[in-house]
Image (cartoon, rainbow, N blue to C red):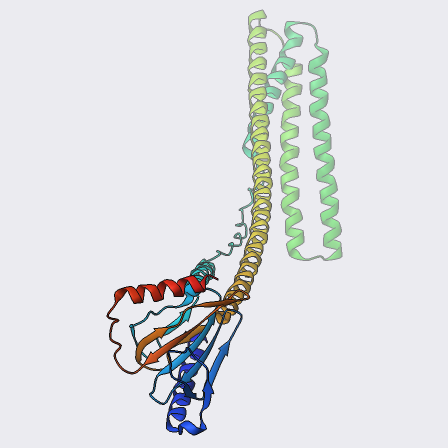
Length: 396
């Protein structure tokens, strides 16, 4: 925008000089200058600001008289005898412009860095994978071993019970075992009878064949249990009623057999307890694993939510910083636009720079631009004297 204003200003000045040059001296406006200079006539153009003002006056010999007012004499960028081109800078606060330009570049670089800096978006945690459930508990093998050991023990006890009356007086414990076996048989017999009655009732009701077949299979199983109970009862009764004609050694052997059967039963029971304990450990481990997975999933979700908050905050902070930097950049551009710059409206040579005069903190001078080559002064001291007087006047 500043360059466009400067270009328009230079074009306008050139057109104005052309128009003024084409007019007759009688139509020009007279302007006062130094006593050593001729009167210059023609149109005038002024540029004013808080830091400088410019006035162009062109005489009929195509010498351009530029009146400048600046805040500091150091803003002048030309010297007497210097060749200048059209559009070349005459006055400019280059120090302030350079400072603001560097500041603007720094802010623009910060904006570019903020825009190019990627803020990674957090990744949502994956849903937990499905865990295969543990198989149902199965202690059939251990229970079968217990049943077998129990049967062996029962047989050993029955044998002892059968032979004890012959070796010793009748043992009440063995009698109780016989009664227990009889009770088992009675229960089995009762179950068989109940199953038979149930099956007959189903036949009378003419239920489905599949149901009747199922109940028949169940009846056969109960009859088998009844037969086993009957067999066990018979063996106990035979052992109880058998003649105890063996000697004490035989009785001891029977007692040893009972103890072995008991140990086998205890071993089978301990194996069942061990299996049950292992099952409990497996279930406990599965529950612990499930709890740990759930806790880990909750932690991942909490961490993801926390990262989302940080991500949103980072975006807000970056947008806020970009907005602040944009405001600062606009302010610097406004300051740069307020720094005046005066350019030469034509090619030529600096014929003369009049001494500076100060007034209310402003410094004024007149620069004369000529179309012809300026001869260097014959007395170098005179030029030095003129420059010294210029500097001295500018500091007033």
